[in-house]
Image (cartoon, rainbow, N blue to C red; front, side, top):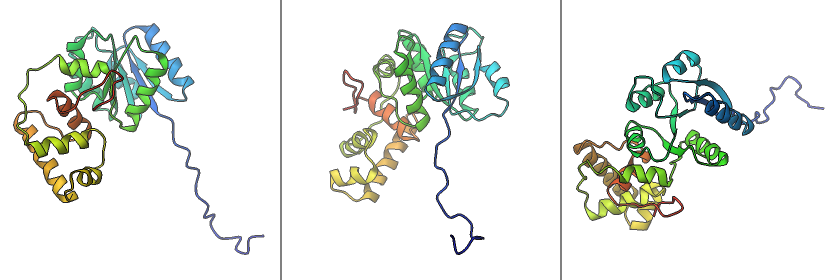
Length: 234
């Protein structure tokens, strides 16, 4: 018997994570139903499924959402940029779910802040894995994303020194700053200074890189990193 029956239970609370909350925006009902079924089977919670981002705004009405799976060709009168930014304003990450050959639209969506792209031709398991990755805040590396970036060269490159390129290459590849410093035999504070300079230089050319995801994009855009055939950076 517990000698202190009035003592509060100090055991660790149930740490079961809450399910990923997903919203689906596609003007084809069959696609919405298919993605919804796959998400529910994967254990995700589908909080809304709408034909447009405007409808989604009404459907959510303040409900928290982690990921919006967004088609790009909605025919709703809004641009891709407007739809992506509107979805992001709800506090969700945006996963583009579209036909792979619409590279221009995918590029616009990524520029507007979409977290990644998965083609409609992808296997259901790949779509589910992409949703989970985006929900965790991971970088979604795949060939569709790389192709969209590679298709648009209408931007000015940041003029990075070799050491800055080295820091960006390692950091954007996924290493923590401490490991970057270790590999380059510099102090962590020095590595951070390089990273601050890199970000400042990208701001100067109108291509801000506030997050690690954005830094990865800039590194791929400028040829500092590349994707292999499996979608991994090197």
